[in-house]
Image 1: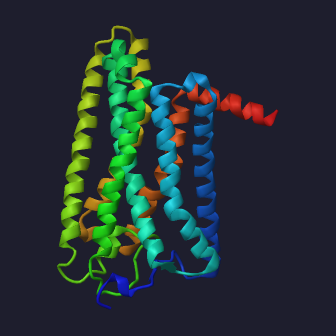
Image 2 (image 1 turned 90 degrees about the vertical axis):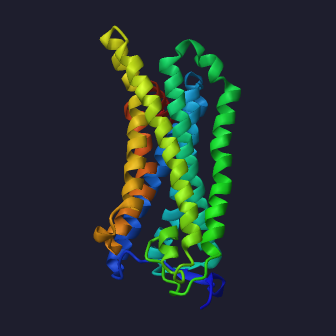
Image 3 (image 1 turned 30 degrees about the vertical axis):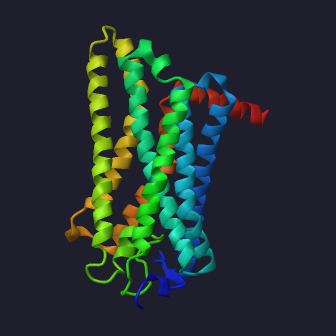
Length: 308
């Protein structure tokens, strides 16, 4: 087969070939997916319905939950359906759609986390200017920029990936269409163009990471100047959920794409892919709800209303 357009489908990697274990995988992934849907939907509903949460921080959290819902819905439902129906096939355009949407949601999430670092910086280091620098119009513009900038990024990656000739068959060694695994199917040296795009992307990601680090250096310096211990504790509590989410996303992403080839294996690649594609959408709502009294109270009130 001379190029990727010769395929009308790809074959994804099954977690197991044993029917009983396939049904176990179906049940486990379905439970995880429903938990992610419920947790993110609860936070979205609480932010929309509680006027106390109509602030920049919760507006950005609202967008983060939408992105988490989008990213996990791109990969997990197909894997669930494949295990239930005992099939490995995904259509060519289904694979293209997965690559585009996953790149879009992951890029937008990282951009939004960068914006949220700026929000925390202004709230702690320039509190008197918070309402001016982060008014409703500015927040909408920053969130829109995070979403909009990810569209050409995802389009560029998807176009480059599927314009590369594939000479190594159509078996993707992953449970969803992942760019590095598709590149392994390419002809020798034909993947260098996409590698160049990945290098540019890494540079942009590194720039965002540096911005986040510099923001928190300024935040820590400002917090340490707060005279009261209660004030320092409150300031750190405001930043802790965002710091935890950023640490989770960055650490898993770095290990996934920069791990040494000597320790790489198909099994490890699948485990790492599950961690960075499934874990954040499930864990992020828990991190924000457990460490935030305002959000916790809003969720409690909403659940009480539903129960009554």
